[in-house]
Amino acid sequence: MTDRWAVLTDLDGTLLDHDSYDWHPAEPALQRLRALNIPVIAVTSKTRAEMADLRLSIPDLALVFGCENGGVVVDQRSKPERVDVLGTPTEALVYCFERIRAEQDAPGLGFHEVSDARVAQWTGLPLDQAAKARRREASLPIYWPEDAPGRQFFIEAVERAGLRVLAGGRFLHLAGSADKGTALDRIRQLLGDGRPLKVMALGDSGNDDALLAAADWAVRLPPKHGPARPEPVSKAILASQPGPVGWNEAVLQWLQRMQPAQETQS
Image (tube, rainbow, N blue to C red; front, side):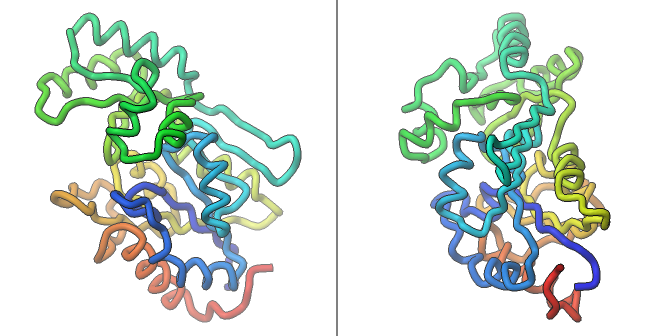
């Protein structure tokens, strides 16, 4: 490619299957990106602790990645690793959440106050991975029962307090001003070598909107379950299938469209 590109991707429901967390259907596209020397960079709601295991199981993921919906960016290319906390610390988010919940008698439950077993039940993760999902630095996932009232009132109260609520595939995520678009900007800085870095981004949920909006090429993956959400990012292309199958197809189509793409990035 004449331009220098990176692929920034959400994980759950995007590169990873929503139910099984399997990534292998995306292997052909991952192999092609590897041959072209195009890095695959995770920008996810997962924690730094979870990413340590995922990078071992998915070897094509780059040593630079964003965690907790962009609240944390990690660069493992040198030791010790560089950790940039861009978002509001979790302790401050917990304080805000508990205050608003008490005022509204809201039914939400934060990851900080439930057991590893409860998080495993909600997510389908193994118990050890659920424990790592609770090790938050700049975000707070909240379980809100689907049939429980008051969700919008809660979100509005959080926003009045100067924080934000991002809607993920499974949870509400309390966050500060940092988002996945913020992470994209920091990753561009970290990977800067004097040439502009163009980004192809993929995501499936509302917490991916900022990432898709900031990218040069954006793909929205449809949900595996339920109706597709309205598309607030006008330039995003809708993939034909959810999860890693749709990811694989979208990336291969993008590479073909970017032809001639036979030369590796230098």
